[in-house]
Length: 279
Image (cartoon, rainbow, N blue to C red; front, side):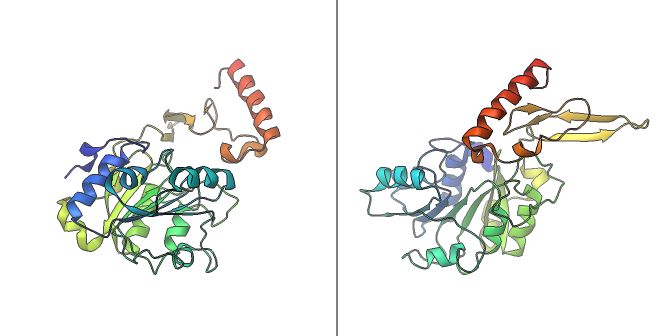
């Protein structure tokens, strides 16, 4: 079964609304509970908003930013089925998802968990043990090839992410099987449900169709280094050209975490790159 044929966006970014709806339809009636973090304002690029608004799902929505959490509570404040929490989900006993959800009425095997925190996604899922959702939708770094097993260090100050291959490996370890890969998310179901999907080969290489963010590096027999594929740093909008260069150290962070001064300096840096044909 090719689940990406059902891709559709209502609030999601790359077809997750349609894919998740089809997966939940195949699984049959459930408890109609979902969890999402970071939930942003509850609608922006959300993988759960459609289920809450159009399918009557109950939800625990977790957002670390106070301002975004305020927007979240304004959006769903009148919905008694939505619990909006202002927390950062981590991977230690004091802040992992098990600890946070323990204070809510959500069942342990709820229907859907969506993880999107631009970095430590792998580690927060790995640290979740008590709660075993039927479906997990988790962000991976789309610039990493499907053949590479990469996981960033468990560090809240880093925003590097993990590869889809690493996510698939972790999924198997936790009793899940990969059923779909969108441009930015790997979607898993509990292993006992996997036969319902009729997927013969669920390797990341097979299920992943969009590799447009991947840059391949190879060398000629003469030692010349070549770049093919995307050739871009997707989140910074900087083109990789000539020899491989890293960004200056102050900019080697997720752009959403730049301070006001760094943002202004980076804009000037981008303008300089455009002048020399690298952006």
